[in-house]
Structures are given as structure tokens and as C-alpha cells.
Image (cartoon, rainbow, N blue to C red; front, top):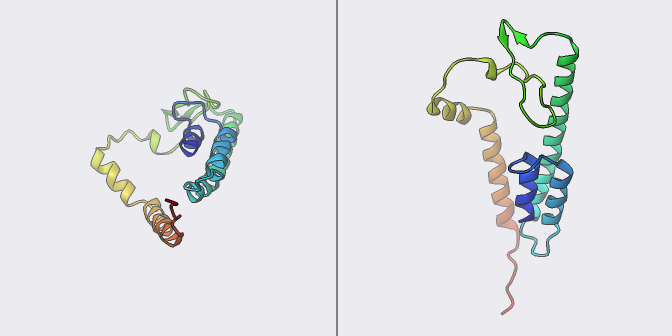
Length: 142
């Protein structure tokens, strides 16, 4: 349960995004007496640190973008701004959001399958599976 709460607070799903609180829940999951979530919590804590750093850099980029004094348009196209959260009103960086191409579900799935993240996720999944296979199973006292 603590691991799930950490995930919810890290990504702001149904609650306000709060990295310190997410870390606290991940730590509680890691230190639980059963030890079931120890490896997953360690991986999540590493990912949390990277996620927090990425959000910080993104906010700095947005502040820099606004401080340049330019209007919120690129090639005559209005840059969308974030509607809520700590960065409300800040422009979203130029990229795929500015393209007006309508994509189908199949296009999105194929794009994700062919992205560089897919092999990384596959490798990490295999490593996690191998690690869990080598971990001794706890004996039950009857």
C-alpha cells in the first residue's frame, strides 16, 4: 500500500504531486517488515530522483523561455500553456504538441513500440525478473 501511495504522489494521480511525500511512502515500503517491496521501492526511489530532477529542469526551461520576452507563438502557431499545477500559465516547450496531425491509436502504439524506451524497459524487466529469481524465498513456519 505504501508503494502505491508513493507512486500516486510522485505522479500526482488523484492527489497533488509531492516528491518528498512520495519518497516517504517509498521508504516505508522499502523498510516494511515483509520485505516484499524492497527491490521495487529501491528502483522507484532511483526513478523518483530522476523524475524530480527532470521536473526541476523543465520548470527552469519554462522560466527561461518566459524571461526571453518573446510571445507564445512559434511560426504563427500559439504555444499551449499548462492549465494547472505549480507551472500554471507557463508555455509548453515546442514539440509534438504543436503538430496538428491527427494520429490513430495504431500510429501511437507503433510509435511507442519503435521508440528507444521499449528495449530499455524490456532489459530492465528481464534484470528485475532475474534478480527476483535469485532471491531466496522466505520459509513459512507452520
